[in-house]
Length: 412
Image 1 (cartoon, rainbow, N blue to C red):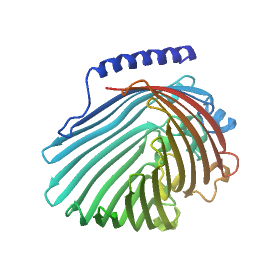
Image 2 (image 1 turned 180 degrees about the horizontal axis):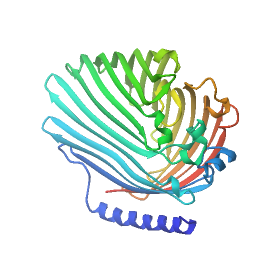
Image 3 (image 1 turned 90 degrees about the vertical axis):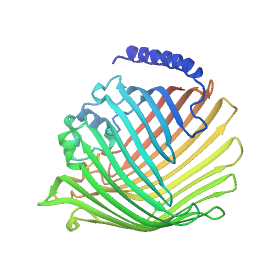
Image 4 (image 1 turned 120 degrees about the vertical axis):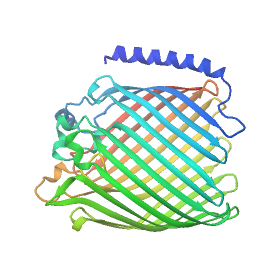
C-alpha cells in the first residue's frame, strides 16, 4: 500500500465514521431498564512507527522488514449483555484488521471475542466463559535462530480459553469458590509451532464479603502446561505451576479503590530440563480520584506467564505502570502514562546454542500520552504518541521505537 493510498483510505474511513455517527445519534441510548446493554463502536486508527520491526537495523534486514512503516486499522468493537430471567448472557469483542503501508506481509486480522453465561441457581452462581483471539505475533520476541530469518516473521497466533466457575452462599459472608479452565495457544507458522501449548488449570478457595470491610479470598491453584511439539533429549517439554495466596479488594470512600493479591508460586518443569521458578508473586492495582478532573492509577505485578511467541519455556514478568488522566473540560481529556516491563525468559536452550541468539531477559520502558477530543457523546478523536526502548541481554535484541497515531471513534 503506497503512502498516498494509505492516507486516502484513512480519509474514506473517517468519512464513513462520520456517517455512522449521524445514524447512531438517531438511535438513542444503547441500554434499557431491564439491564440489557448493547454498545457498538466503529473506529479507525492511522499509526506511524519508526521501528515496526522492534529490532536493530541488522535484524530487520535479515528478516526483510522495513523498520519505518504506517499502519491503518479499522475496528468494530461491541459489548452486549442480555438478561434471561435471573440469568444473563454476554458477548464482547474487537474485530479489526491491520493494513501496513510498506510491510504488507504483516497485514493480519486483530480479533478478540469473549462470551459468557451467568446462571443464578438460588444459593449458587455458575459461570461459563469462552474467549478466542487471533493476531500477528509481535516481532520483538522472536529469539531462536530461525526467528532471525524472513521465513519466521509471518505468523498468526491463536489463543482460545474455556472455563467454568461456581460460588455458593449469600451476597455477604463466606462463599466457597471453585473454577476450572483450559487454555490453548497455536502458531500457524511451522517454524514457530514448537511454542504451541495446552494448559489446564484448577482453583479452589473461600471468599468473604462485608460492605464495611471489602472482598477477601484465600485460594489454592494448580495449572499443567504441555508443549505438544517440543521435545528436548527425548523428553516432552512441560511444566506444572502451583500457587497459594489471597486477594483483597476495597473501596475507600468515593476516591480510592484498591485491589491486592499476594501468593507463593512454584513452577516445576519436566525433569528440571526446562527451568524452574519459586517465589512470591503479587498484583496491586490502585485508583485514586484526586479531584473531579484528575484521576491517577497504578498497577504493579509479578507472575510466571506461558510463552507463545518466543522460544522460552515460560517468562517471569514484573510490571510497573502509572497513568494520569485529566479532564480539561467536557470535551477534552489528557492522559500520560509510564510502564516498565521486566521479563526473565526461562529457556531450555543452554548447551550448543550461541547466547546471542537467545532472548534471556529484557527491560522495556514505555512513555506515552494522548489527547481525546469528544465532539459529542458518540464521536471522538484521539491523538496518541509515545516512545519505547528495550535493553535486553547484550545488544542483539536492543531497540527503540517512537510512534504517533490518530484515530476517530464513533458509537452507535
